[in-house]
Length: 112
Image 1 (spheres, rainbow, N blue to C red):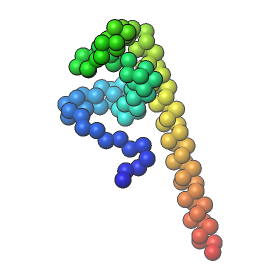
Image 2: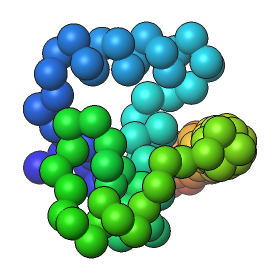
Image 3: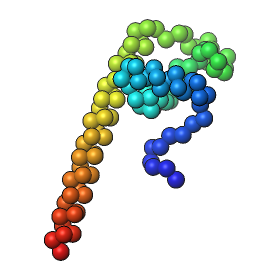
């Protein structure tokens, strides 16, 4: 079993490579972008993709949802950037705490 929060999916390899490259060109981690897209999808109850090319859409979804405005997209990108920065800070802090704990445990065991 993988670590908690691990993600695995069967993407079209070309799509995944293009997505990774695009995210990297923006200085973003593609897994963090996917996580935020999943949150947005859940918050909108799937409406964010209603009418998107290649996505199946129910009749009520298609009529209740318009295209996302560029201002809304920009807001999403800003939020993604802030969340990714916050997540990186948390990861760095946790790594620091783990290193300190390991050092304390090593020092404690060597004193015995």
